[in-house]
Structure formats: C-alpha cells, structure tokens
Image 1 (cartoon, rainbow, N blue to C red):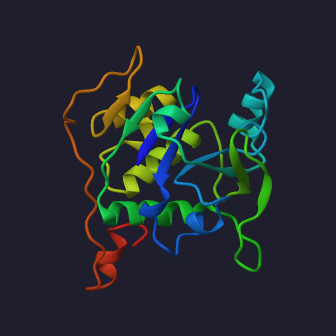
Image 2: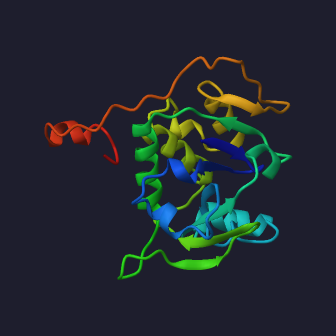
Amino acid sequence: MYVVSHGWHVGLVLRRHDLPATSRLAEYAPGPFRYLEVGWGDEDFYPAKRGTIPLALRAAFRSRGPVLQVVGFDDAVIETFPDSKILQIDLSPEGLASLARYIDATYAVDPDGRPIIVAPAAYGVGLFYRARGRYGLLNNSNTWVARGLQVAGCPIDVDAAVTAGAMLHQTARFAHVVRSGPLLRGSDEPAMRCAVPRCSSRGSRDLKRTPYC
C-alpha cells in the first residue's frame, strides 16, 4: 500500500485485490479499478474546489462533520500522482485486514447498512461519503491516516502526525520513499517495520489488544 501527499493532507492508496472480499470499501467503491485512494476530512473544506482560509478555520474549530473520499484508478501510483511525495509500505496480511476494517468502520451508513453518498470526488472517478468521527485541528486527515497505519501495526505516534510533513517524516522510518521531496528523504532499507499481531481466538482479553480484529 502507499501513502500519497496532497500538500496539506495525505491519503492512503490500496490495491483492490489486497482487500478482503467482504470489505465495504471494495464493495461500494465506484468502478472496477485496480487502485483505491482513501482520505478523510472536513465535509466543507475537503470537497471544495478551492480551499480558503475561512473554510480551513471552520474545519479546524467548528467542523460540521467529516467525509470519506474514495477515488479509483488503474495507472501506476507514481503516474497518477506525478507531483506528489509517495511512500510505499509493506504490510502483513493481518495488517492489511486490520486497516480495511478501520476504513470500513469510518463509513456512516443508512438504516440498510449502505454508505451515504455526499458528492462526486474532488478529482478522478470517485465519491465522497458521509463519515464517522469528529474532525478538528488536532484530529484531522493526517491523524486519521496515522491512526490507520497504527492499527495496521506501524510504529507511528498519532498525536505527532497532525501535519502532512510530520506524518510523512514518521512514515519514512518504516516505508520505502518512492518519490521524495525537499524535506523528505528515505533510505533503501527502512529502519523499522510494520507488524501487527495475529488476531487470536483464545479469548476477549487477547482480542482487545489488537484493534479491528
């Protein structure tokens, strides 16, 4: 999977075939695309064609709620986002499954259990869906991604990932930097690895230690 920078915020890119067959993300994403990019953000700022200071301030301090953006594409990640910093992360099957459950749990759903469509995606082929959670200055799109990586077993401090730069700097310790930037450098061999423990069936005490089992 990949982390892609979009300036102020970052997104997650997953290969569709890596997702569990029962994944809500795979089931409801538009089109049979090879890759799915997912991001979480404020319902007014995130879909806006142009971000403004008033929108940013309202998102930070008086958000009306969050949305989840899902965009599908087939081309290579580095070609789809030619101007973005891109990091590739090796996750275990258990880590990917935990991450998929984390994303699925972010969807707000209607009484029939279906995701609620809000608007077309800001770019490409995709959609915005109503999401769960409380968006704010310290609980934003970057910390949402960081929390997902933590659930997947990656050694990341969510509270220290408020900005996109801080998020990418931490991620570079356990990721391969596909495309670097002025403040982002990576080595051929990451210093750390992501490793989530297997979900256990030996009792609830074990299950509580592994989120989204």
